[in-house]
Structures are given as C-alpha cells and as structure tokens.
Amino acid sequence: MSQQNVSRQDLPEQTEMHPTRWGDPARARPLPDEARGLVEMVFGVDDRPAVDEAPLAPPTVDAAALADLRAAVGDAHVRTDDATRRLRTRGKSTPDLLRARAGDLTDAPDVVVRPGDHDEVAAVLAVAAARHLAVVPFGGGTAVTGGLVARREGFGGVVSLDLVRMKRLLAVDHVSMTAVLEPGLRGPEAEALLAAEGLTLGHYPQSFEYATIGGFAATRSSGQSSAGYGRFDALVVGLTVATPVGRIDLGTAPASAAGPDLRQLFLGSEGTLGVLTAVTVRVRRLPAVKVYEGWRWPSFADGATAIRTLAQAGLLPTVVRLSDEAETAINLADPGAIGGAADAGCLMITGYEGEPAAVEAKQAAVTAVLTGLGGTPAGTAPGEKWAAGRFDAPYLRDSLLDAGVLVETLETATFWSNLDRLYTDVKAALTAHLGEPALVLCHISHVYETGCSLYFTVAATEGDEPLRRWQEAKSAACDAMIAAGATITHHHAVGWDHKPWYAQEIGPVGVSVMRAVKHALDPEGILNPGVLVP
Ligand SMILES: Cc1cc2nc3c(=O)[nH]c(=O)nc-3n(C[C@H](O)[C@H](O)[C@H](O)COP(=O)(O)OP(=O)(O)OC[C@H]3O[C@@H](n4cnc5c(N)ncnc54)[C@H](O)[C@@H]3O)c2cc1C
Image (tube, rainbow, N blue to C red; front, top):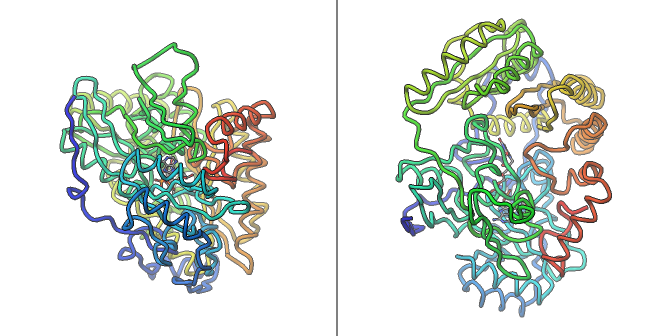
C-alpha cells in the first residue's frame, strides 16, 4: 500500500457555490432566447429576481462555546460571519432555492467550524456534546431532501461541521484496487487524485462537480454510470467514523460473516450517527475508451423491457438511461434546447467505458440484443450530446426559476413487475396536483437485475405560493410511491422531507431500531437533530 498524503495545496482552490443558485456563479446564464420563447408559450414568463444577500439573525452560540470550538480546530477555522454562514445554509433542492431566493435564511448555522482531520472532528463533537450544540456535517451542500437542516429548538446553537479541509487521498492499494479518501473531496478532486494513480472511482451523479465523498456515502448516492461502476454504497469497502461516543473503523476484509455489516448503519446515515472521516473505496483502472450512443424505442415500455433483458442477461453497459415519451420530446437534458420532436418515441443512451477490446465486445453483444428487441440505433451523436451536457441541467433550473417556472425532481425504485404501476401512479399524482400547465417527465437511470429506479422531473408555473404548490404535489407523489410498494428514495436519501414516508417504509419495528441505534451512538442527540430518524 502506498501512502499518498497529497497536500491540500495540490488541489485547485475550491469555488464556492452561489448562495441562491446552483454551482459556479460564473456559469449562471439567462434562458437562451429560443427557450425563453417556448417558456412564454407554455407557461408564460413571470420574471422573479432573487434576494442574494439577505441579512441573517445574529449567531446564538455563546462566547464560552466559541472559545472551546476555537481550541478544538484553531481560531482561523471557526467562522461566524454572515457570508460564510449564508453559504452553509440548507442544500440545493428547489424548496431550498425558493426559500433562499426569497431571503429566508432562518436555518442558517450560528457558526461554521472546519476541522482538519479525524481528531479535530472528534474534538468538535466533544465540545458540542458538552455545550449542547446541534452539529450538521456539511460536505458539498448539494443535499436535496433537507439533510442539512437541523432542529435548533433545545440547543445552544447550530454548528455547521464543514469538511472542506479534509481533502487528502490517504492511501492507495494497487494490488487490492482500493483507495482511502477523506470526506471533503469533491467528485472532480477525488477523480483527479485517483487519475494520477491511473485509477477512477467512476461515480458521476449530476451533482458530481460539487458533492463530496463523505456526502456520497452519507446519502447512498448513485451516479449516472451506476450500471457499470455500481452505486456509491457498493463501492465502499471501509469507513472510519467519529461518533459522539468514540471512533469506529469498519471494513477489514472484502467480505465477512462477522455479524451484521455495521458499515450499512453509516451508509445513508445522513450525519445523524457519526461523521465519516475516511472512506475506503473500490477503484477501477482509468478507462482507455469511452463511447456513448443513442437508441430509439417506439415506447417507454419497449425500452424498459430492453433494459431489463440486458440486466438479466448480465450485459449492462456502463451507462444506460431511458427517457419516457415526454422527456424525449422536451429533451430537458439539453439546456440549450427545451423543445424537441413530439413524435420522437423514447430515447435511450448507452455508454461503454473500459479497454478497447472489452468495450467492443460488450457493445456488439448489447447491439445484438437491442436490435433483436426492436430498438433503432441513433448513432453516437445523442450519446455525445448527453455526455457533454450531463452536469448542466441544474443551471437551467435556476434560469427557469428566474422566469417563474418551478422545476424539481424526485425519484424512487421498484421491482420490474411493479414498474408500470409505479410509473403510472406517480405521474398521475404529480399531474393531478400540479394542474395545468405542467410537464411531468421521467427516465430510468439506475438498473438492476430485479428492478430499476424512476426519476421524475416536473416543470410548472410558480404561482403565488410555489413552495406550497410543490409540497402538495410532492406529498401526493410520495403517497403514491408507498401505496405502490416502492421505496421513498433510491438515491436522494431521507433528510427531513421524506421522513413520514420512510417511517411507513420501515414500519414501527424499523423505527424503533433506528431510534435505538441513534441513542447508542449519539446519546445527547446532537448530530443533525430532526434529520432521518423518525
Ligand atoms: C442538481 C443536483 C443533482 C443531483 N444529482 C444526484 C445524482 O445524480 N445522484 C445522487 O445520488 N444524488 C444527486 N443529488 C443529491 C446530492 O448531490 C447527493 O445526495 C450527494 O451525495 C450529497 O453530497 P454532498 O457532499 O453535497 O453532501 P451534503 O449535501 O453536504 O450532505 C448530505 C447529507 O450527508 C451528511 N454528510 C455530509 N458529509 C458527511 C460526512 N462526512 N459524514 C457524515 N455525514 C455527512 C449531511 O449532514 C447531510 O445530511 C443531486 C443534487 C442536486 C442539487
């Protein structure tokens, strides 16, 4: 095993996200003229300027607690200024953006604390327990289900435990093909450090540019190449966690029969059970070739059958995505082109990454199956277009919010035999509650032998009360998911927003298990109070 200890200075300086928008402030752009014309036609443009620098309430943490926090991590790494607190307020769901754009920063932390290593994280937790402060672990801040909003009642203040300084590649094992990463590494930073070793993680969620290793593990994230590389929780081999009751190191072998797998307690724990301070991941060799292509299907059902056939034949490409008829027509994946052909059928994207011979063999085998099932090859252009714009859609959401159009996504998963029902029921719930004019689009992007996820995107007029409008529609969609026997979330996690449905999904015994585990690891209840645990 080689020890890397790559210094933080080797990474490019981190760009902060815009406080009320997605991503790099320099990449914000108005709606392209053509798109604005279409929005005018479908929804009517209703320009809505955002309040970018709303004032915050003064921090409530007392001087003695601040002094203890400074002793734990150093003076320079404890911040109470408005600009820093504003940037650590909530995540990037559309409700989060709507609140921030309206100047509502009531969930801002009182203090932002930046530990540099595991021991400093542990020291912050000790101070928080002693001073009864709520602690919100903060990775990339891309949460979309309220996982960064702690209940503040009953606490002496809220600490944002910002992992931005923990950005080292701690070790690489080229024999076992594993790497140990610190939690604050953003997706591109982790990939850059691994690429220098000839390796890749292959985890590319749409939030890749800003989300972090710790956040991926804490939310059980799933990337766009999950068919080839696996979901993030499947990539995790080991974890080091700082809990209020002590340190735990997990994952001593590739597989084990030593009781229940405790790593699973922390994967998806959303900062409520401990702070992930190191994540050991399975890595792959950097692919020599990447090929993306498109296929057309007469219907969503035909395309879904084709994907199921591939999955059950052990022939999944690295990337496989299928848009339904509405999403294919709108082509939301391309921010430059809101419009599309109304009779385009359904577009599937397939992608292959690896050594040339392996890519060629897999592509040939998949092509034979898809052709045999009635798919029409559309060449590499649609695949390349998707790959080029794969991280751009969140910028489009901001431009649409500016124009008075509410855009949000939600996701779920089920077994293949239940797919039709889930698709129909969630779509009907969203359509009924959003009213006219509204668009409800869907795609399949994460696939298994036994089933797949469904990812819905909606666009509707904001109206006078966009938050309430969305919450009613989302609530109806969540009811439909649970009624259909599906999961409340395939990869966005539970946070605050999904808690009522999570409780239904795991039942009363599951809820009591979660509460008992929470109590054992966090007896004072300081970690992300109100998040995840029903
Ligand atoms: C535009 C957009 C696109 C997205 N696309 C995808 C997608 O394709 N796939 C997908 O899976 N998700 C997606 N998401 C959701 C989000 O990016 C993921 O949930 C991501 O894993 C969060 O990582 P983060 O570093 O930003 O975590 P944060 O948002 O900072 O935190 C998320 C949760 O994890 C906790 N946490 C963070 N770091 C740690 C740690 N080290 N230890 C313990 N707890 C911690 C936080 O307290 C919080 O509860 C998207 C979000 C947006 C806004």
